[in-house]
Length: 156
Image 1: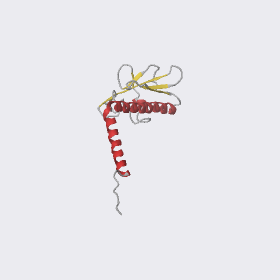
Image 2: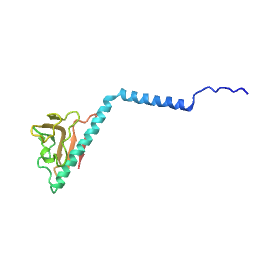
Image 3: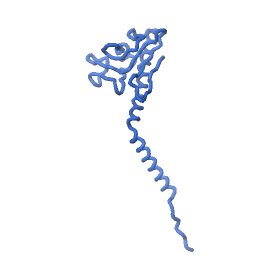
Image 4: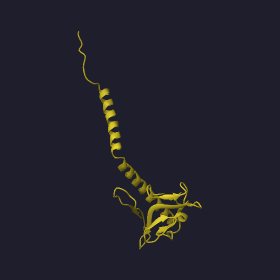
């Protein structure tokens, strides 16, 4: 009996090729728009930071029978160590309610780099703003430098 040899690809060969193509496609998609990915990653970091600051403020208020840090006003102020239109929340929050004040990934600064805001010679500008509502104790923390046209602001 004469056997005929089948021509074609096996299932394993096809799956390997499809897998390689999927990996190449993913690499191409990432390479085509890295700036967009960086902007989205920065905004995710900003959302996390805004929530962390707001949680620390509310933990402070809870421990102080609902009294918010006195320096928070109904005018939006940048959370920074010095400057006009700023509020220094470091002494009120660090290290009891938060380890250090988080910085905006693009506009936040601290000197010296890697310091904690409560260090003796440290200066900082988080790049985030805080304000309380005119009526009640609702606090809003915002990230004015949000990218891609997003508005990052949390009120509680």
